[in-house]
Image 1 (tube, rainbow, N blue to C red):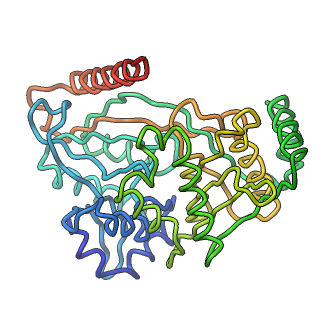
Image 2: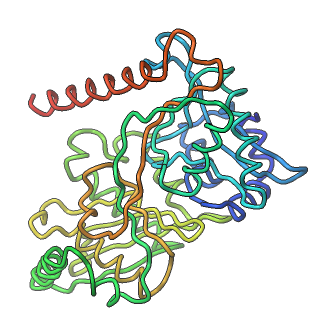
Image 3: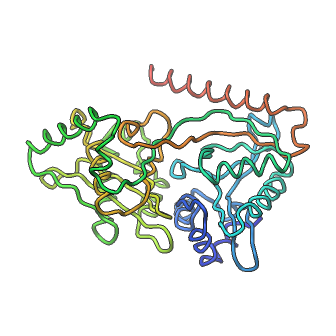
Length: 367
């Protein structure tokens, strides 16, 4: 294990791991982790399980330990996540993939002192997720699934026409074209992309303004409502060095922003982390119109190989994106770590907590 300060001292090794990773994603990269640190959302003593060969990093997973209902008063380890880290798969290099995962699993047991892991937002249908679960089982761990959902993703076709040709929701595509035409009746519609410089800064400010003017601003959950999340927005969606790039797409009407989408791109996958739209135009769904334009640009400009919606269950993108990735919350217990709590009991406690939180949200909405 190492802390963040030690890992920050090896920026080239960190970036090199992302470049060699089997499934690189931006969420545990230097750019994203550093953005959280600069915003005060991650401490320097944050711990990382790593696998190293000489001066090269072969695997990395940030984690924390703390009391959790699934431990009933004992510490449980979890990957470090935030609302801007919607996936928790470790970054693992591909040269000796199986061997690296076996070493990583041993490190997980050491990091938790033999106690359980509660692991949310793990893609169990991806190569890394499947291989990690297999490595845990091979090492004698017991695992259980608390819950899962299907996240929309989209793999690039040879052309946009090929994407449209056999799309299963043609009525949805027709509806989005109709809404775009209605928007265009009011003025000049334009969709522009920014990746650097003043244009990127301006797009981020437009996003913050749109989000703050909507229901998230009223609820106090917009990024601009809190100093730390505002700082995170400026750090996260700024020009990045290394293997992560930033993309901001804006749909505007006569120069007035209607919707802005902010994405991070790494390893050929664009993760569309945040979208905000002018809620005065809700009836014409400018956010979804923008998403359809991004799909067009995705095929025409080939800026990535895959679009990841980075959403939870029930996303509006389910009718636009073609593929699905199964994302789950799992409980994993190393050999000898169950103690007085079986895996079934831990899973039941996690499900109880989920139901209680859902009921609390429902009651708050009613109030």
